[in-house]
Length: 365
Image 1 (tube, rainbow, N blue to C red):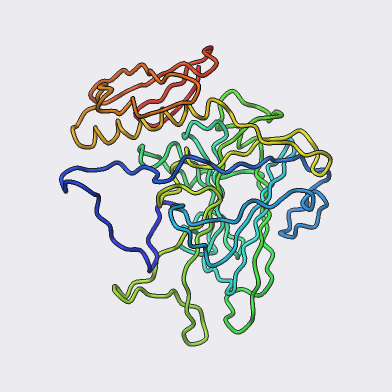
Image 2 (cartoon, rainbow, N blue to C red):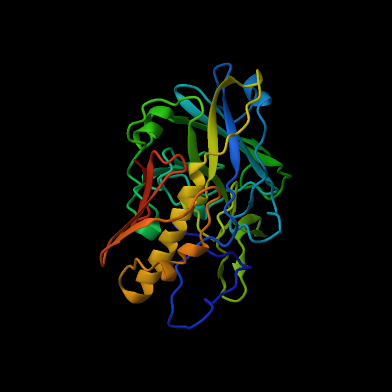
């Protein structure tokens, strides 16, 4: 997904305050990413879009998807949810997308599927917000696999010619596609993402271990349709006579209309237990609070640069006193030049140091 285009109900909005002051876009919801424990599969998974293996029956569905910005209580018109499993070779993702009108048009690989109705996966294995994967599929089984060096806000290179080798994907329909004359129920997808390729974007990691956590999110792009002359057509915005843009629902809400804020994605925790044998609780990582505190300084730094042309190390301007980390004092070390900055702070254990810089990358040493 390159950007979040407005649907027919979207309204133009202006930033508060002076028209000359620019605000750097940041999430408008509490930081509380969704979580999910991923169990190992107890048998081979036949990737056919039908969740008939016993292991799928043993793992829970995720929470239902919500509007991408997370600021409205209105539920998406159609229910969407996911399940996950893993083994040493693959991360398996299954999704169920309820749908009254199954529709898709794009058949060419790496077409912009977010302009169809599509299911989307985003994976950042080392949670640094850089070097992450995007995988999309529509009801025709067409895929778009994309590698992003960093989020678009940070000057991304989006590599569509990069291909995810050795993946498997399939779609199953309860209904028929592109046929307004019948009753549709849902379409489901089953995807096997190769661990070898996923681990390549997390330097130093060559295997998944018990307790590992990855940043992950899932999205659904949905277009509004109407029937004309017996075929589906995109509904038009009466104010512009242009087709309504896609509407997005996600597993872990972003707090704004942009999926490419990886810090807001959910967290999956890998379990070494076989699905159905024993339940494992998700364990919050203490460092996540430090990571989020640094991210708030990143937003402030980017906004200051946007308006004044350079970065600042002034703690009052950055609002450092307003950033709280339970159990520790937030007293970061800030280094700035006109074009670059790096902020660092010891972790809660005091043995490692967290860092963030001007291009948004966060890491620990």
